[in-house]
Structures are given as C-alpha cells and as structure tokens.
Length: 184
Length: 397
Image (cartoon, rainbow over all chains, first blue to last red):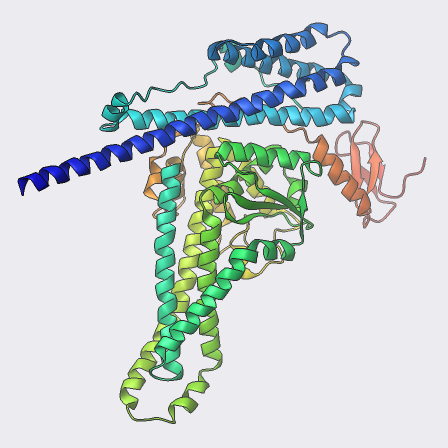
C-alpha cells in the first residue's frame, strides 16, 4: 500500500516536472522564433538600401555624407561579430535612414518621383515591421523570463539550464530622444 | 497571450455546448409540439439543420461573405500600403501565416476578418475605409481584425451564429405553422392531459430558447468586439489609431452598412445594428481614448476602462487580465507612428475619383481641389488651403 502511494507521488511529480519543462521549451522556442522574425526584417532592410541609394543619388548631389553614412552602417551591421555590435549598428542605420528621408524633404523633384514614393512606403513599413517584431520579441522574452522565474518553475529552469533571455534594447540615449522625423 | 487564447477557446467551448443544449431542447420541444412522442425526431432534425448550416459556413462561409460584399482579392502590387500594414500587424500579433487580402467595392467604411483558422484567414476592407483612414488608423482597424483571428473568434462566432440561426429557424417555423399541431393531435386523444402539459412546456421552451440563443449570441459577440479592440490596442501600442478610425467610420457620410445577412453582421468591425452584436460605437471610442490617456495598454487596463464606461468585463477570460501592462509604444522603444505617407493611397483614390466624375482643380497654392461631378457649375468656392476663389464649373484656361 505504502509503496503504491510513494509510486503515485513519484509519477505525479514526474508529470508535473514534464509539464513545466515542456512549457518552458515552448516559450523558449517562441523567443527564438521572435528573434528570427526581427532578423528577416533587418535583412529586408539591407536589400532595400541599394535601391534607395540608386534612386536618391541623382537628386542628392550635395548630401554625400548622409548617403555614405547609410552605406557605412549597413556594411557594419552586416559584418557585425556579436549581437551587441549588431544591435548598435542597426540602430545607427535606422537613424541614418531617417536622416536621408528628412533631407529628401528639401528635394521636391525627388518627392514627385514614383520610384522614390514606393521606396519610401517600403522603408516606412520596414521600419514599422522591425519595430513590431522587436515589440513582439520583447513581449515574448518578458513572458518567458517571468515564467522561468516563478516558483516552482525556477527550480526546473535551474536544473535544465533555461537561462534568462535578453531584451532588444536601444541603449543609446540619443535615439530615445530622437526628434520625430517626417517620412511624408 | 497563449494562455489568453487557450482560455478564450475554453470559454467559447462552454458557450457552444450551452447553445447546443438549447438547440436540442428547442428541437425536442418542436417535435413534441407537432406530434407527442416525436421529440427525438425533432432533436434529429434540429441537429441536422445545425450541421448542414455549419458545414456550409465552415467550408464556404468566408467565400459567401466575400461574394456578398463584392470583395475582390488583391495582391501586394495592387495595394502596397494595405499589404504592408497587414504584414506589420501580422508581425505585431505574432501570427505565422499572412491572411489573404480583399478590397470591397463599397463607399461604406467597414472591414471584416473571415476564415477557419489562423493559418487560413482573410482580411477584407472596403474602398470607403481606405479612403477615409490614414496609415495609423488603418493599422488600428487591421489590428482589430488580426485580434479576431488571433483570438480564434471567427470560427467560434460562426458556430454560435449558426446555432442561434438554427434555433430561430425552428422558432419561426413553429410560429408560422402552430395550427399544424391541432390537426395531427386530433387523431389520437388517448393521453391528452400529459400531451397538453408537454405542449405548453414545449411552447415556453421554444420561445425562451430562441430568445436566450439570441441574447447569448449578442452578448458573446459584444464581448469579442471589446476583446478585439483591446487586442488591437496591445498590438499597435496605440489605442488612438483605432479610436480615431472608429470615429471616422461612425461619422462617415457613406455610412458603414454592407449588404451581408444579419448573421454575418457580427463579423464586421462596425455592425449594422448597434444594439445587438456590436457595442455602441461611442462606448468603444471612449474606452480606447481612456486607454490612450492612461499611458499604458494591456487587456487589464482595457477591462478597467470598460468597467468605468459602464460595461461588463465579466466575459473577458481571466487569463487576459493577467497579461502584463505595457506602456504605450515605449517599452520596446518602437519609434512612435511615423507619419503616414499618404501619397500612394491618395493616388489610387484620386484615380478612382476621376473615374467617378470628379474634376481636379489645381490651385495656385499647390493644393489639389476635388470637385464632385454633381456640383453645379458656376458656383464660386474658395480653396480650403489658401482661400483663393475656385469656380465649380469646368476650368477655362
């Protein structure tokens, strides 16, 4: 009789642990998936840039610096060795692109260019998508981190090495205080 | 979010079970009414009716709805901005599959989502909606539809509507053919007393059942609307976008009524009958504005605003209320709403206006004035931007 009770408790305990473990795995995979989503959008942005520069170049003859910045940060981001380096470069790239768009305001002929208008919409959407995928990623990370910190999950997380996942943060204070740039 | 979706589904399941019980009861009562002892046959007929209706709406419901609303499918190249917004909201909601997009050829401002599951869904908007909304507002509307998809509302609402529909078909049928019974029952009058009791009971059941079914359906639909609004606020981190869109929709001159059956009205972002399947528009706008003013978005913050506005959040799944509160568009430091490049949509719409007989007048200040064809010539107007006089008649060089 006593044996059966012990056995029952052990089985129940095992089921409990398995359920928590599986829950954590699912959440962690969602975090990974979230990261991939951001990556897809960042790559999309790399692909848009040559097109944009090609279109803009003829009009913005006196804005070499602005355009060079975009090229520079794009290759920096693409060749980044660590996640931190990459995030930094991507944020710089965001700003450089916003700059191009702000400067484009001064070129009415450019704003009448169909190609440019289409690119502008694509770029706006890409920036939004990066923002939204980052938002979704951070939400998922928050839920995952919360889940692995509460009791009794924290014990199982410790046993099976479920580490804390990092948020995608924008560390640069200048970016936070960045003035609103008109894309229209 | 996962917890929310799961709990929402459990709640849905209970409602469907309850509705199913009502359907069985109504079927039984109708059977007994026509011929005592044939309650089981009534249940069978009611069940059959519901299954047929469900199969039709499950496999063809979306297509029927789209056809009735005169929607045509559009691809990315047809409507780049709409596509981009849908994609953005797909990302924000964390859905894996991109819904198909449809544009309805109607000046009324409205939108709906359809489809069996998140993997195979449809988002449809009217031309009227595209015309009046800016990018941020359109984002809010699409986010609302995405929330319906994410919350698995579509299948559930279809199921509920179908069952409520079957019950009211039975009730209508009964109320038109109540006299049938007396003829049938006059043939056997052995246990008339028991039959009379069953008959009265059955009648009460049918009346009550049809009423209850409708009330449940309406209440569930209203809750899901509120929940989808809350979801839209969470996805966009910007309740003002949807609030402003709803405001424009409700004050749109072209209205928001679409030629779809009453059962399907529950699917629209703005239902035709404001007192049934949809909460009052002003209420929804108020709640969203309050949320925007509070500086934080979450399902809980939404539920609080809903209660403050006199609504009941009792039907919100408890898990939704445990979702974390998120500051409006800043936890993630997403750069807030890049102003809308209206150019693309404006061009499409201008082309549509020219086709519809509008006359474009280029003012010296650079403004483009669109004069409707039905405006009589010879009127003197003034440019809304610079105040220069404009004549409504044909331009003379």
